[in-house]
Image (cartoon, rainbow, N blue to C red; front, side):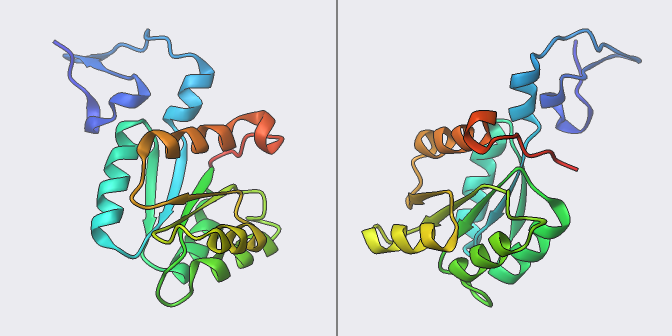
Length: 165
């Protein structure tokens, strides 16, 4: 009966045979999360694939970078609503990437969640000192991570909700 364009079912623009049905109402607060771009900076391809698929199923638009330098470049270009940053990265480690992003006025307001397989307290302290807004450990507990993402994306957490270009 319904046919979706480009598997873009999250934007609620289904087509019925030849014409658009744009009558489905999605509240603005829900649509905001459904169309939110997250930059995932992760060097491990399996981790990138698994986490991006799981977050896409939650309604987020995921862009990916494989190292810290590429992550900084993409963040400057894309201005995502939030960045998930692995700390152990090639080319430029996550700590340095976070420092550079927070030092740049163009990207300083973008919330960053640092991700690491190391669960040591000093890793969290170092990540927060570098400028990370939050910290999470691997393996990822998706419900916990999504809770942190939603908390950082609410207007009261950051002052204003970051806009996607």
